[in-house]
Image (cartoon, rainbow, N blue to C red):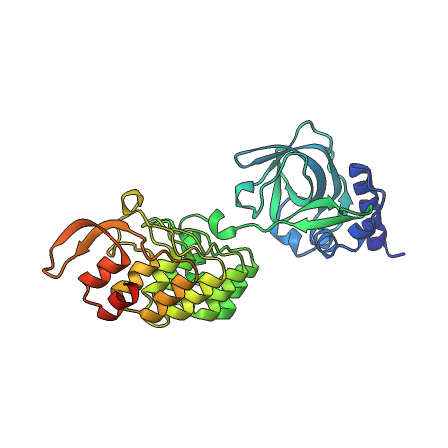
Length: 341
């Protein structure tokens, strides 16, 4: 038997002792586990880190800011510069303290979760979990097998300053390959920018709005009901898109977007050149009958109202509570008026 394979099975044996598994079949066949084991062993990996990379397991005791505390933790493998292998001598520290910005994981770490992860050994005894290399281990509902469920880490949200701006710029690229690469690498379409709490999803709908990239964002977990710092909803932005508002709104609606989210400018953190409007009011303002019909078919309330300054025919802005019908009247959209009556 090859040495590398023997080491892997030895690690799995230790893992069984850590959780009392009756069966290790699913663990041995887990692509994520094998890939992470190889990552710890990787020579290229050890050109990046000046200390050892390690494979750990343990049960979550509690979390605090950027720290995860474990109980019954065990080092499964510790490798220094890809040539020396052993086990970290701090395996049984109580409590086990590991650095991880866990708030950027796609799912919360729960008390008593059993996790497996790669970590960097700290020079002063602290350990840092590698955010792309952490998974939850759960027992299947039927049988003794266990399944490995990898976490996804939102690198764009974790990034600060220029790094976050660069990530968002790539997510807003017109090159679908670049966008998909970013999404695959853990950059979330829900990450807000540093200025106006506007996500890449909002930016894309505001300026570009390509349907295929919009579908890609949704496939990678974009929140179709997200509201940005100016109070704008995604449907509200799509409804005023200059190129294909009906196509964009249909994609969002079919993905579960709520057409009745009512933007509240008074609670918005930042000012906006145009008042944020519910999509049906925006469609009535422009006399887009087809879009109005689509929105109503998906549950939009024809009587929805919102308090905003409205431009009346004389050009004077007055605070008023407007509805789709009142906006159609003030903007002289006779077809929209007839549709709504």
